[in-house]
Image (cartoon, rainbow, N blue to C red; front, side):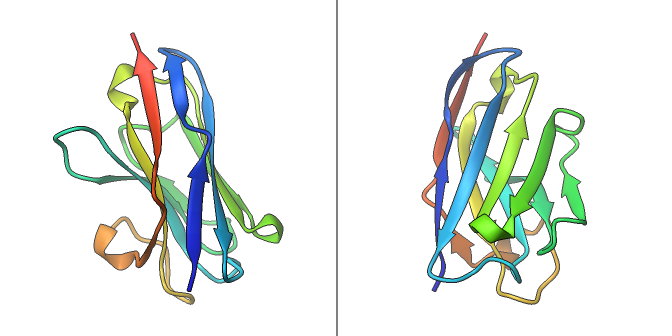
Length: 125
Protein backbone atom coordinates (compact mmCIF):
# COMPACT_ATOMS: atom_id res chain seq x y z
CA UNK A 1 0.00 0.00 0.00
CA UNK A 2 1.20 3.49 -0.86
CA UNK A 3 0.33 6.55 1.18
CA UNK A 4 0.76 9.94 -0.46
CA UNK A 5 0.91 13.23 1.40
CA UNK A 6 0.89 16.61 -0.31
CA UNK A 7 2.34 19.80 1.16
CA UNK A 8 3.31 23.27 0.08
CA UNK A 9 -0.06 24.76 -0.69
CA UNK A 10 -1.15 28.13 0.57
CA UNK A 11 -2.32 31.61 -0.28
CA UNK A 12 -0.32 33.55 -2.86
CA UNK A 13 -0.89 36.67 -4.91
CA UNK A 14 -1.32 36.49 -8.64
CA UNK A 15 2.05 36.30 -10.32
CA UNK A 16 3.59 34.48 -7.39
CA UNK A 17 5.04 31.01 -7.10
CA UNK A 18 4.54 27.87 -5.05
CA UNK A 19 6.24 24.51 -4.92
CA UNK A 20 4.09 21.56 -4.00
CA UNK A 21 5.56 18.33 -2.71
CA UNK A 22 4.13 14.84 -2.63
CA UNK A 23 5.87 12.42 -0.33
CA UNK A 24 5.17 8.72 -0.30
CA UNK A 25 5.40 6.17 2.43
CA UNK A 26 4.78 2.46 2.49
CA UNK A 27 6.57 1.70 -0.77
CA UNK A 28 9.35 3.19 -2.84
CA UNK A 29 8.01 5.27 -5.70
CA UNK A 30 10.77 4.45 -8.14
CA UNK A 31 8.58 2.27 -10.37
CA UNK A 32 5.38 4.34 -10.23
CA UNK A 33 4.14 6.79 -12.82
CA UNK A 34 2.71 9.78 -10.99
CA UNK A 35 0.71 12.89 -11.67
CA UNK A 36 -0.73 16.04 -10.20
CA UNK A 37 -4.43 16.77 -10.51
CA UNK A 38 -6.48 19.68 -9.26
CA UNK A 39 -10.11 20.36 -8.49
CA UNK A 40 -11.62 23.80 -8.26
CA UNK A 41 -14.96 24.43 -6.56
CA UNK A 42 -17.87 23.15 -8.64
CA UNK A 43 -15.54 21.77 -11.28
CA UNK A 44 -14.35 18.31 -12.17
CA UNK A 45 -10.92 17.10 -11.19
CA UNK A 46 -8.45 17.69 -14.00
CA UNK A 47 -4.90 16.69 -14.73
CA UNK A 48 -2.15 19.26 -14.29
CA UNK A 49 1.03 17.32 -15.06
CA UNK A 50 2.45 13.82 -15.01
CA UNK A 51 5.77 12.04 -14.98
CA UNK A 52 6.98 8.53 -15.69
CA UNK A 53 8.89 6.65 -13.03
CA UNK A 54 12.28 7.96 -14.07
CA UNK A 55 11.15 11.55 -14.49
CA UNK A 56 12.51 11.73 -18.03
CA UNK A 57 9.13 11.74 -19.73
CA UNK A 58 6.65 14.29 -18.53
CA UNK A 59 3.64 16.17 -19.82
CA UNK A 60 1.61 19.14 -18.68
CA UNK A 61 -1.83 20.47 -19.42
CA UNK A 62 -2.39 23.32 -21.86
CA UNK A 63 -3.73 25.53 -19.09
CA UNK A 64 -0.43 25.47 -17.18
CA UNK A 65 2.12 24.92 -19.91
CA UNK A 66 5.11 27.22 -19.58
CA UNK A 67 4.27 28.02 -15.98
CA UNK A 68 4.85 24.71 -14.21
CA UNK A 69 7.56 22.12 -13.85
CA UNK A 70 6.98 18.61 -12.59
CA UNK A 71 9.90 16.67 -11.18
CA UNK A 72 10.66 13.83 -8.85
CA UNK A 73 13.40 12.61 -6.56
CA UNK A 74 13.02 8.87 -6.21
CA UNK A 75 15.74 8.79 -3.59
CA UNK A 76 13.54 10.97 -1.39
CA UNK A 77 10.33 9.28 -2.49
CA UNK A 78 9.00 12.71 -3.42
CA UNK A 79 7.43 14.38 -6.43
CA UNK A 80 7.30 18.13 -6.90
CA UNK A 81 5.23 20.67 -8.77
CA UNK A 82 6.83 24.07 -9.21
CA UNK A 83 4.21 26.62 -10.19
CA UNK A 84 5.11 30.10 -11.37
CA UNK A 85 3.13 33.09 -12.63
CA UNK A 86 0.12 31.84 -10.74
CA UNK A 87 -3.32 33.06 -11.75
CA UNK A 88 -6.58 33.22 -9.77
CA UNK A 89 -7.92 30.44 -12.00
CA UNK A 90 -5.21 28.16 -10.61
CA UNK A 91 -7.06 28.19 -7.29
CA UNK A 92 -7.96 24.59 -6.45
CA UNK A 93 -7.18 21.65 -4.26
CA UNK A 94 -4.14 19.92 -5.72
CA UNK A 95 -3.80 16.17 -5.47
CA UNK A 96 -0.94 13.85 -6.25
CA UNK A 97 -1.64 10.39 -7.53
CA UNK A 98 0.21 7.25 -8.53
CA UNK A 99 -0.52 4.36 -10.85
CA UNK A 100 0.18 0.76 -10.11
CA UNK A 101 3.88 0.02 -10.65
CA UNK A 102 5.11 -0.66 -14.15
CA UNK A 103 2.49 1.44 -15.94
CA UNK A 104 3.09 4.45 -18.15
CA UNK A 105 2.14 7.97 -17.24
CA UNK A 106 -1.27 9.05 -18.54
CA UNK A 107 -3.67 11.94 -18.15
CA UNK A 108 -6.60 9.66 -17.39
CA UNK A 109 -7.78 10.10 -13.83
CA UNK A 110 -9.20 6.58 -13.77
CA UNK A 111 -5.74 5.10 -14.28
CA UNK A 112 -4.50 6.32 -10.88
CA UNK A 113 -5.15 4.17 -7.87
CA UNK A 114 -3.26 5.92 -5.07
CA UNK A 115 -4.27 9.43 -4.03
CA UNK A 116 -3.22 11.96 -1.47
CA UNK A 117 -5.62 14.03 0.61
CA UNK A 118 -4.89 17.21 -1.31
CA UNK A 119 -3.41 20.61 -0.55
CA UNK A 120 -5.24 23.89 -1.08
CA UNK A 121 -3.78 26.50 -3.40
CA UNK A 122 -5.45 29.90 -3.38
CA UNK A 123 -4.34 32.65 -5.72
CA UNK A 124 -5.64 36.11 -4.97
CA UNK A 125 -6.05 38.77 -7.63
